[in-house]
Length: 468
Image 1 (cartoon, one colour):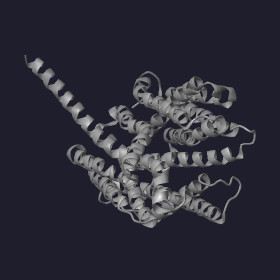
Image 2 (cartoon, one colour; image 1 turned 45 degrees about the vertical axis):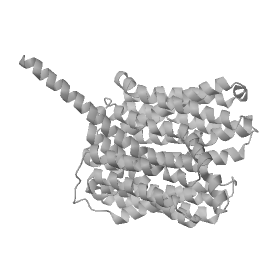
Image 3 (cartoon, one colour; image 1 turned 135 degrees about the vertical axis):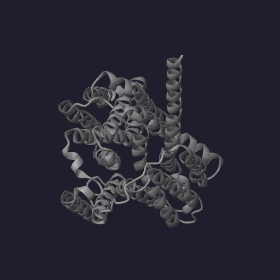
Image 4 (tube, one colour; image 1 turned 180 degrees about the horizontal axis):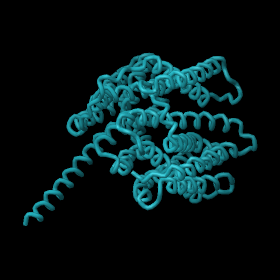
């Protein structure tokens, strides 16, 4: 009888633990939806904003650029904030900033006002993107982290697929103001859930901010994002203006200074570059960069290839991206199962090879005559890259101490941002070059980025760890 009661009590505790974990995951999902939905919806609202403010689409580019810059430079600052303060408070501050700035954006009377509010919104987005992974890891532990990340990452796939339809419906029924106001009830819901379910994790009040390191890294990262945004939004493949040249020089100089500065004071660095000395972390970071490059570059350029080079309709082109998103979504569900059967390195190799398999047929123009075949390629490609990016994000935390999780989270966001930004800029340039009369250069670049993932994937074999 006693043993029965013990087993029942253990079973009840496990059920309660699972319920609690699910509420934590739901709380983080609500917060992570906000930047994704906002960015997706804004792209659909650009024509309406252009008409309302009587400005060109090119002038509106700055509300996207400054938002991205603000989010980028917030990432390293958030890493320090999570070390020093309660991570729950950091998460709540990000939600509050996003809530207030979204409401403010809806009241903007001029482009300059909207840009200013978007900068604050970008800061909130930077906090939310950086804080989510450490909170999840601290709350659920390493054993459940990978499966939990698969659940939390679902909005990253679902929102880009259905977001444009939601935004289009909002614009059809109301005005552009509601593109920002839709964030308000979601933010309030996320705040309530976070207050109730996100656990406290106290920081180290003695963690001082390396102001010199932060300003240097933020300037380098901000300059790089500005340069890449300028290149990707330009129609001039070979023309580099003086501002791009100057910001490129600033970026390189600041990155070099930051490396030198951090090596001298690694213990108090705003972002610890000593993590890259470990083979496991370094190879996984390279894999994350390359997979992000291939994923976001394809997301950016493939619709243009479908429509401009092969006369696909906008609806058919969107459907192809949607099929790729479905593939990425499916990969979230079988990552944990694959990781329990194969080593991390072998899972990475499987993802890389399937990515090559899904991309290589797009080199042949005849393939585009069959939408079914192209859809199959997009499904395989989406599943492979979805698997690789999520695998890399979770594998970064292997053998990392609790004190270093904010640094790892920040590097995860930085590497994803750099991979996506560089990939987008390079694809824009190559598509305009179009040497051979059909977009072979862009597809070759996508295939190359996918194939090069084999190098860090093979290297993981030399630093094998049990899947977490």
